[in-house]
Image: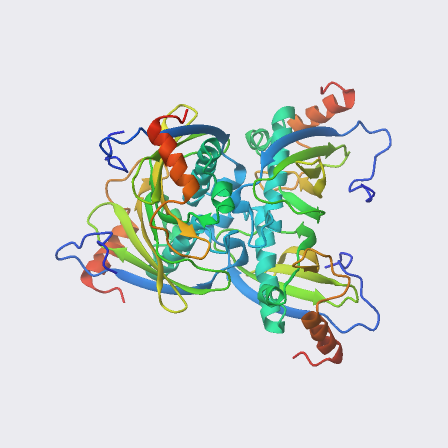
Length: 154
Length: 154
Length: 154
Length: 154
C-alpha cells in the first residue's frame, strides 16, 4: 500500500506485534447491495484485537480482571474492495508501540486472493473502573510493555 | 469543538446542508461496560444520512432508482463521551459541498444535555450498477448540486 | 388470524394491555434476499416491550431499579409476509394476564398496508440480582398487577 | 432433556443428520446484564445451518445457485442457561426428515461444561426466485433427500 502510515514510526521503538486470523463472511453481515455492510467492520476489528490480546495477555478479560477499561477513543476505516457472502477473509491485527497511555491498533483485512479489502485503526485509552482517565498504563500492561521492549515476547 | 474541521472549507462554496433527528439508546446497543458499543455508531450515522437524504431527494432509494450505488469509501469516528441505555440523543448530519464525485458527510451526536458525545465523517463514491466507478455524479445528483448552488434548497 | 392463540385465555382475567408503535425498516436490517433478515425481529419485539413497559411502569429500567432481571425464557416467531427496506411498519405489543411469576408478551407486526407480516411471543421470568429465580413477582410488579386487575390502568 | 420433541418422529424415516461446531462468545454479543443478548441466538442457529448445509450440499449458496430461496417460516427458542462473554460453546445442528416441502432444523447449544444452554428450531419453506411458493422441493434438494433415504450420506 502506498498510503501514509496510520501511526508514524517511533525512532528506537520495538517492532509492532502482529497476529492473523481467518474467518468467512457470514450471511447476516451482507447488505442488500450483496457486499458486507460497511458498519460490520468494527466487529471484524474487535475479533482481531481479541485474538492478539489473548496471545499476549492483554485481552478484554485481562483488562477487566485488573479493573481497567480500554474504551475506543477513535476509529478509522478505509474501504478498498468489497467482501461478499461466503468469501474467505483474513484479519491481520498489528499493535504499534507507543510511550503514551494508549493502545494503537492497525488492521488489514484481505480476501481469499490475498488482496487488501479494508484497512483501519483504533485508538484506546485506559479508564479505571472508578471512571478516572489513567495517564499511565495499568501495572499489568506496563509489564507487558517492558517485555515487549526487552524483546522477550515470542 | 476546537478540533480541526473534517472537511476544510471550500472558498465560494454554498454552505453545508444540516438535518437533525432525535432517538433513544436501545438496550441491544449497549455493551457489558454499560455504554453504547463503539461499533454501533456506523448505524447511527446511517440513520442520519437517510434522514437528510429523504429531505433532499438523495436517499438510498433515490440512488437505487437511478441504478447507482454510493458505497462508503472511508469512515472516521471520534468518541468524546459515552452514551448509556435509555439516553436521549440527537444525530446532526451535515452534507458538505464538494466539486468532486463524492459525498462528504459529517456527524455530530449529542446527549440529552446537549453535550457532544461523538463526531465523525463518512466519504462515499458513486458506482454504477455495472460496477464502474463514476468520475462525475449521476444526473439526478448533479441536478441536486445545481439547486444547492443556486440556493434554492430550503 | 385463524391460528391458535399463543396464550390461551384465562377465565375471569382482566383484558390484555396493548400498545402500538410505528417505525420504518432500516437498511442494515435487510439481507441479501432484499427482505428483513429473520434474526432482526427479536429487536423489533424488544422495541415493542420497551414502549409498553414505559407506558405502564414496567420497563427494563423499572426492573433494574428494583434489582430484578426479567430474562427471556422462550421466544417464538411466525413469519407470514416479508418486510423490505424503507417499508413502514407497526409493532403491536400485547401483555397477557397471568397469575404465574412471568411476563407473557405477544407481538403483531404489520406493514404499511395493515397486513400482518409477523407474529410471535416471548415469555420472561423474574430473577433477583442474587441470581435466585423468583416464584412471586417483585413488589413493584405485584402492585402493577393489582392495578391492572382493578381496571385502573388506562 | 425431558421436553417434548420439536419434531415428532416419522415412522420409517431415515435418522436425522447432525453436525456440530465450536465457537466462543464474542464481546459484542453480550448485553448489559452480562449474558448473551437473547436476540443473538438466531445468528448462532444460522451458523449451524450453514455448517450442516456445506457438509451436505444444501447450503445457502446451493439454494441460490438453483434460484430457490428458503426463507424462515417459523423460529422457536428455549433459553435454559445463560452464556457469558468468552464462554466456549458448541452448536449442534440437526436436520429432521420430512416428506413435506420444508426444512426442519433443530438446534442444541451447549457451554464448555457440556451443559445445554439453549435449544430451538427453525422451519423453512422453498420459494422460487419468481416468488412462487414451491409445493415440492427443488430438484437438487430432492436428490439430496433421495441419498439421505438410501443411507448413502456419510
